[in-house]
Image (cartoon, rainbow, N blue to C red; front, side, top):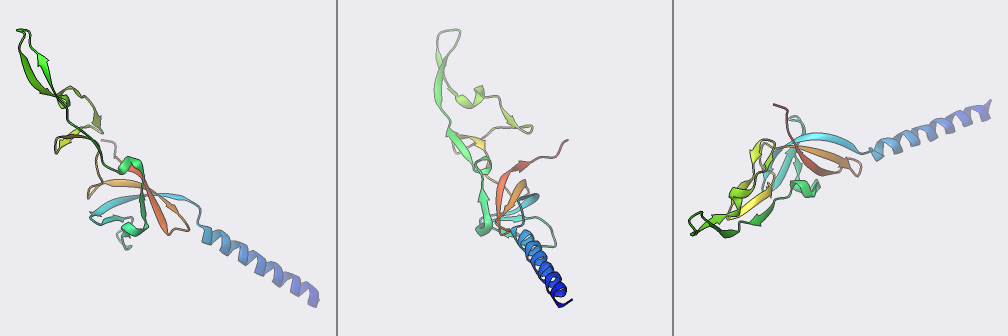
Length: 140
């Protein structure tokens, strides 16, 4: 009888240890957040929680600003004259219904994160770190 009780207690302890280990691992989880600050970066997942600070956030390539300089070149008119032109007028591309921006003589291919942007995050390292995978957009 004493041995049976010991085995049951050991089984319960092992089961509890397994449950705690699984809970502590916190497998990867996707979440949607809102950018609430950019310098330093801050993301809010839930208005009842403290925002995630820059120190626990990792940026993926899709949310880092990418730009190329606007190239000046010339066009020849039907009359044979040349006139200056900018490459930007020849680019037709948009991101979720918004055309590519031009800032500081550069075409912006990826905008930096801005306050109000909705982002897709992946929680990692037991919930202590988050990777910002991309912006998200609502269907209109």
